[in-house]
Length: 300
Image 1 (cartoon, rainbow, N blue to C red):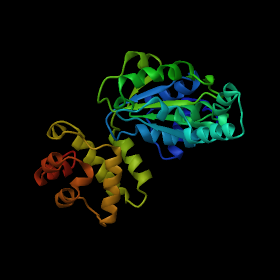
Image 2 (cartoon, one colour; image 1 turned 180 degrees about the horizontal axis):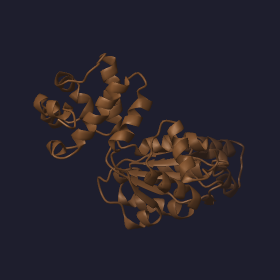
Image 3 (cartoon, rainbow, N blue to C red; image 1 turned 135 degrees about the vertical axis):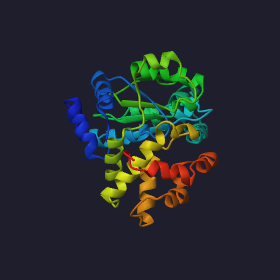
């Protein structure tokens, strides 16, 4: 699929590769593709931001290029750098041959063959139909790196001093993700479409668990979806630093299958709490008494 014909087409295509988006998210992705604009996805960890890029890559039959952001990320790690060792060997060979025109030698060492392409440049130079570029956890990078991204986000081009301006051969489908550990600059947000990705409702989470954990029985998948949905709701969620994401729900379901669990009970919840939570305090907060309350039928 080069480009989905409608929001409904995109929704169905994502479901065929195991990604269950709601209509608002599918609309945001559809518009980003149609308008050729980057899409900024913000939300809690584990709600499916990164997974969306992988699913979109499959749906569009485009290669996925990922730029993982972190504190101290530099331009050369995101865009390009020169193969200095190969350049040095070329210059020494030119000297050994008695080449006198050093200006010519300098032009030669800045040829395309000495250029090491990093994710942004790879995405810009990807042949048609283009790539899916994931700029993951952009909030972990620093503000100067945000400023560096503006040219790419606004015009799908970058400037390389030794070569000039490199423009996209085919517009990359670009997704930026943020866990909102800090606010991004308005200049970045203005260049993107925006969507807040929240936890799924119970029915959508059930569909995800069924698709991702085919070994789980219908009853077990329903128990997992019910339990996690109630755990994220008030007043239970107040007891935890961070509620489990979709990734934790799926991993928990896989663990329950591995344990041959037929019915989820407080003891099983207590034994496997380290899959749902990654903080010691949250694991301790999920007591057996709380688990028993969460496992009660909704009408109890």
